[in-house]
Length: 82
Image 1 (cartoon, rainbow, N blue to C red):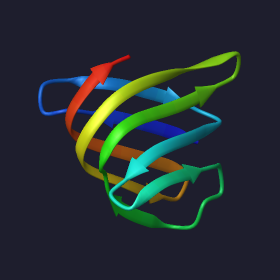
Image 2: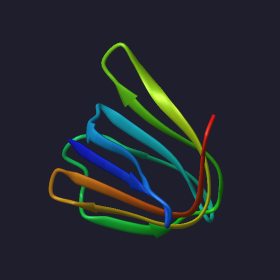
Image 3: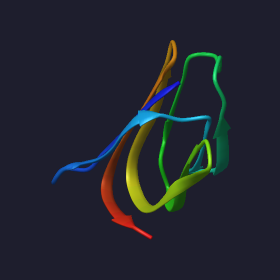
Image 4: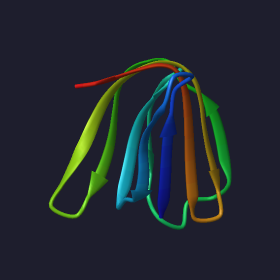
């Protein structure tokens, strides 16, 4: 699946991923390829984008996560690389 993570200042991640684990406003949410269409508000916590051989972790706060088709879009109010 294709994952895009952006903040108001810049694009943080744009590429293929095997899974996403994100802090939704009411708890953690996991996204795998083939996930149903979905949208949620983000809370504060660690966003993990898993790719073959590793992954990227970001501290996020606020914003939203959207799944449409094979694309995951994460627009966060604040993003820091952890």
